[in-house]
Image (tube, rainbow over all chains, first blue to last red; front, side, top):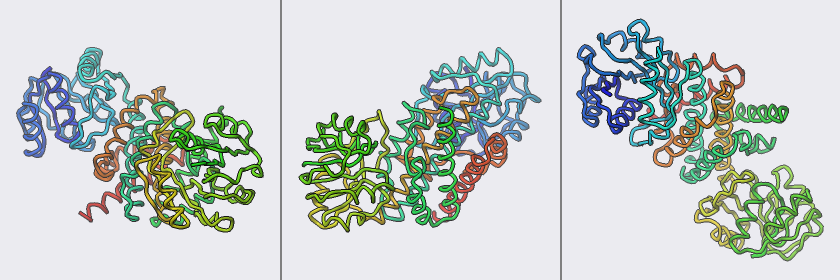
Length: 259
Length: 259
């Protein structure tokens, strides 16, 4: 398939490389930044662009992977093209394309991408949506060339999945950051937490998170929780501790009532 | 070493088994529950007990691994013994033993233990503290027979480490539970989040959590965050979303100022 990628951020970069490695042709890479466009273009044998007016109309697929807020403007500046237009955003409707195109959709990889990490696409769940059956089938085939976990999912459902991903990834990573702050003040290296972090993630591969819960909040250990609150200097972090502990107790109660 | 274990919960169970497998002799297992005492005792070749009065004075080490709140009472009911008394609690001072014993300490494994999971002790960081140099040395030697990550750490520092572990493990697991709730309402299986959860944990093994942060809060993507807040039915969960997003923005700002 001939593909043009609009964007050069982490998602655009990892997706373009995976598509290139799966044997697809990357025609063009567009980015606002000339440096980013040529860096990525060089790695996937594509032509770099900074002018949307020069985007070729001949690709089979145009993947828009820019910041959510920037997408409407970038769509507005696109020339007329053939092929299919898709975005990669968890929380945006595919109807953003509707006023410009008949064949459009979504190609959402459920993963966290950072520079210098190369996650294997084969295991990344891909959620697709198409504006019509042919587009859906085309996207499904493309997705299957990258991953063995391909799902069709309507936009409303995908937005809730994205919300869940914010809890399971973005907020989780922030808790790692808060824990790093706490121990680095004590000159304890963050590395001592890594076996705990690894096992916490590994446990939920074979038991439900509610069954895996441990710690003072689920034991109702008030004296430890009071002591912890006195150790937290920052008011917002203290409030996060309080709310999450309450939420653990509440979820546990709800689950006990259900079983 | 001859060891008696006071308690039969997850920490007591995993620790007793690891000590047994490392070649130590487990003399007795005490538990309030006769079933739990004999279950664990059978697996480690020990005698089960429910009466503290029958605890033998002949062990080299008595490991107290009961709920934090219950520890003072259990200590109060102990007969006089030889050897060393230690507890396994992250947030309790070793001085709880001081009125009963001269040789005491702490043996704190930094890991989350659940039934049916057998984490390898070799990689579990063990934090020890002794009431005198001989006790410290004895505990250090014992710890080294289980793990290649042994640290001496005073109580005040250990409490902050335990606080960090609550963020990195207990609260993280609860965020997994909240994300499971969100998608299971949509009939999406929790399994689709596992590659994301695994990569989020794996990323911080080679970059600092602040460098690994992704998602709407660090991008300052207000429209996605507003949309997410409308999708969360529960008021406390909405507040958790709001606070964690603010905290991500705040920590990011602080780090930009520092660099």
